[in-house]
Length: 183
Image (cartoon, rainbow, N blue to C red):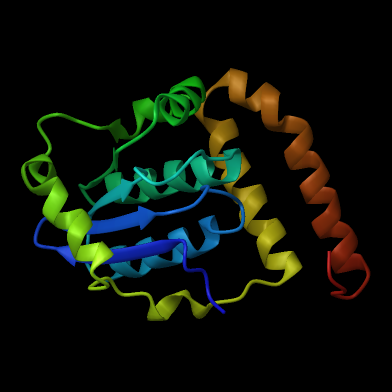
């Protein structure tokens, strides 16, 4: 079964992705996949709705930061809707608020927020592309990439995630040395 914690819909002004569980290393590869396909087809604005999301881990936040950078390269942005105080604090603590607007009051989607959420609740969101599965090595590569993105944002993150990245890199090197066995 695919990841059902994420639903999405493309509105006129951008892609809306709703996370209905904890944003984590488990569903962040799917978030990245959905968003990258949208960007590859010319999209530039992504809103990630965290109203139903009780929290986010560092991998999810690193994935958001990476997507924000990709969107900025094409003149777009990533915005967050419905962040809890805890989630907002975690994102601001890592400096994501420098790349991502969190609940911007002037955002075009604020005027029809309820309708957008209803569209996703009625099952009008696409989810067929969420059947992707990730091997242990692919997941490790994704987690490493997300943490390297966070590290590159500021020296405090570099210090906080340096050991994590070194350990993940060692796991990947060991994997390659052993001929591709799972990490």
